[in-house]
Length: 438
Image 1 (cartoon, rainbow, N blue to C red):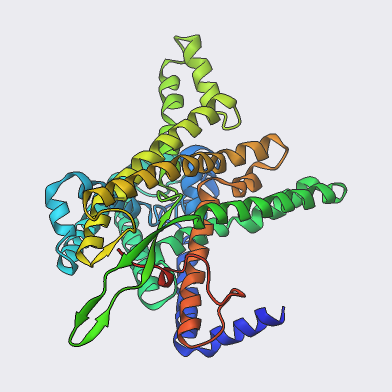
Image 2 (image 1 turned 135 degrees about the horizontal axis):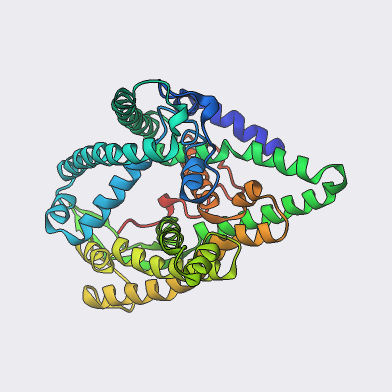
């Protein structure tokens, strides 16, 4: 406890870090306040909560703004969709590959295209959002006027959220976009805890403590999965420049066991709603359609979780393949005079790295699939649906990833000012400063 208090004092004694933390808190407060500002012309008492399906997932990410018909009703999600589209285009389209290699000017151009695409996606999603989530009885003005004004406000809200995220990254601490998603998820945690406590009652306090203990170990496991890396040793040749000797030291390239992050779960989760939607169309004509619809509408069914887990494993391999480029890593190492001991530079190094990625991706994919279906096991065990969402899935992975990234940045500030780090060793595991950048 004494060390914790000392660390907090050290954090707030660094003026730059203190200002960044206060800026981050201020931006997040603005974001949360905006989620309660209802679109003009809407009667809030007539709104229906979005607690199930993809709408429930989006509402969790946006901290209730989606079901509140808020001006931040779409939040940062269109920007994330646009970023994913651009990321995929940089893999398969030569024009975007060229932009990515042009350095700062190319990144600025990609950012401009992302913003324009964000506006287009927000307009498209905004129409669907207004039609699908806001009941007619909740609209108190002319329908044409309401649709036009709401689209303008939803686009403005999304662009403002994007601006908030950029400002948090620039003037705050942590990745701004990720922080906005995390704060939306965490905002529902107190309500979930209260609901679980009320449902268990005084007679179920022991069971509640067991649930909390299990949740603790699940979080520890997710942290281990998020931080687990395979370190590839890299030796740099000695170079004499201006009479001085550079290089000659051994460093490491960390390859994450879960290099794809939460993207496989997001992709798989979006497709898991397709069978139920198709079954609804044919439900009146086929018993098989009724069976498929009921099965894939139940997140605790073994069929749902089996298909979900298989899709996550497949998407993990796919997303890792398009985001981690062994050829580019090998080329960068060769250009900087680095090599893997015992492996020839160039193509042999790329094959060596590719083999390592292939070997560690399978266990990482299986563990990621297990984390994704953990909420289903929690619900089967009797945990409330709202509280069970924090036992795994996208929500827990995002929270752990964002918190660990933020702690690493704080750790870097402390070490730069010659303070003791947040961990006993003085260095958090997988701190980027510990490794070579290929």
